[in-house]
Image 1 (cartoon, rainbow, N blue to C red):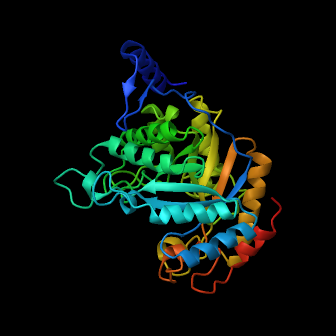
Image 2 (cartoon, rainbow, N blue to C red):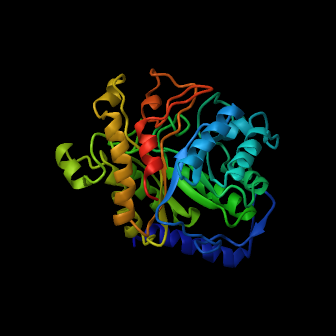
Image 3 (cartoon, rainbow, N blue to C red):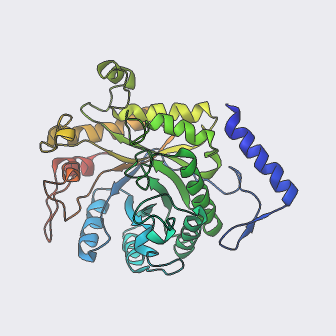
Length: 378
């Protein structure tokens, strides 16, 4: 194991022995957290999730949760923008939408994972307007603590940010793995102090070969996270696993030969992230696939080159679950398909072409992928 993160943890433990305890921003006095400070439940290998858009319309939410339940999936992933709850000023909360989503999911026995990101303007440095890093990571920790306190025992998992290795997702700034680890740490401590049994999942990283300032390759970013001391502050490693043009069984080695050494153009790129975990001695943790899918997009040139047919999309998704069960157990945990469609999407939205249902209200039509996943043995 490289010495960087190990020395960081050891130094922290020594500091804890010297000062005894530290006081967290949300008023909890606690010993310095270590990887074993809080319980870490293991998931079945795999478990089945679908991303949905349940925020604005309760009728759409009820319908789409029924679709997830009827498909035999047991997890729903919902994006929760920090600014949509604590958007006006620190300590002023609006829980209306999250209260409803959690209650609706409970009625169907679905596990909830909240994806947390999108900082409020009041968290930014004064010179900034709508972009920039959160000035004080503890503000995010305080928010995560309040959220986990409200839904203790009811929200099973939290994803901390989304694709921070892309500038457009990392607060409009060049990717900063160490800066992300600060937010991850603050959120982890905030959640675990309120709900020790809740699972904290690191951000899914975007598979990319692009470099700064617009992006950072996901494996390079993950290594930098570990070097910055991320290991104690997540329960499952989050990954994104689009299949691009290829069936799920193709290896990163094969894809690399086709794409000038770029190994990320395949579903099994997950295995490259797993190798980083092994390198840093983090093999006891499971992996959560936070986004997986194939697009059928004929419209957008940047995506159309790897579009497949709806029938292939259905077949590949089923085969991806089968491959993971046969080859990645027991280290694979949650696997989340994108997605039940947002009812506002049209064919002009690239997300429309990844979905396994058609958008719309009151009726929705399922695509072949939904039907195949519903019939899939689980």
